[in-house]
Image (cartoon, rainbow, N blue to C red; front, side, top):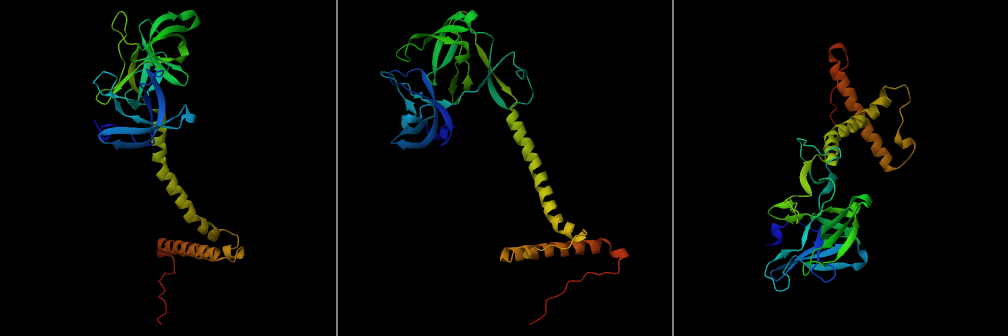
Length: 279
């Protein structure tokens, strides 16, 4: 698979993982700073957003674990926004804009979760749930694919584990224990930000026309008012001021011309273009 097949580009924020000892099974937020090839291999230069002191890391996009032949994609998009079933806006709206992962109530033993710890997400399985203190015991992905240790984690630091592939996009894996269940589901919900943006785009041409009309009327307001005609050259003797005065005079003449044409039936005035004198 080549870069042509992947939806990533320079400047995009993604998540990346590593097979390096001590970081196996963790996902890090990164920004792509460069995409290039070495031979037939694809590489990304990544800036770790939560570890800015680390500098730029070069990552091989497809890697193989030791003693295995399967090519594994080391990057994925930023995970979808998380919501809960009891939150407003998690119903089945018709207009679909944004993919959201919706959690089914409380965590249960066997749920696959990602634990936000030390500025990255660690994948693991829930071993024990303590509702009274809102904590769980989780086991990280076993070795050699993860670090394989157990930790206590708070509810608020957990999100459902998700898997991403180019073919299927995001999916929620099934629980590891008991009945075949998923701790969350993926839904499409209206993206309020996108709605506001589209509404602003609709209004932008109208606002632009209003501004243009205001600019056109500004010189004529001076003309039909009771005040003396103000010239920019009276305040500044610069060339720019003179040019602005000429432009305003042109607008005034056009306005007078339109007024004469509109009232031509009841007026003895006739507008005629005055040809320049021949040399």
